[in-house]
Length: 285
Image (cartoon, rainbow, N blue to C red; front, top):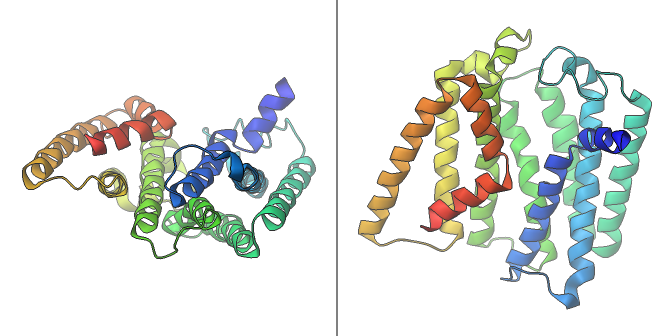
């Protein structure tokens, strides 16, 4: 059981599983469905499993690439590689095997186009965003593109139109959600980023700049959620919603910028399916 727990950390199961689910949701959304259809189970499970193994492999490769940097931060110091619970060779070979298996599933059961998008995501995340993090504080704005590709893959697999308004609103939600996620991470663990020898967005923008960036990203997430739900309110209801949202944003600004402990709690909520559900529920209200 201990090995299973460690391996789950290596593949970042808490991220890989939601990423795979976002691809499945993209597939279902393309067909205007909310539940799987028995006649499409092969396509649905192949897009889910293919993206899951690809995301798990990319996450493991990322930890292999950043094993030295992870030793410097309290937040990442206890990960399996810096804590020497597993060997770098094991993580590297596991990552390679999962990436190949994920791409194979996509190639066999989906299409070359979807497989190519998966490869692009791998290149952006592991060979673009990961090395850029140590060179520029703005790497996240490039790296967040990788997180938009799984729902795009699912959408294409489900037969959706690439120029669909709903698709791009959904991708916008995915993009700004990641920026907000990263901003909350910076706020919640600001102590680590303040003393880091490397350049990062917290040191570049300062606390107020990160809070502002986070709140703006949340604003766009909320707006995208309204549009994606097809809920375009009437004029009066529109202004009531935005007044409600302004109050919520003011509360969040004072909360996440005051105490790191509260910031960490809110970060965990935002990074959960519960947080996404609450966001969508507020948008539909």
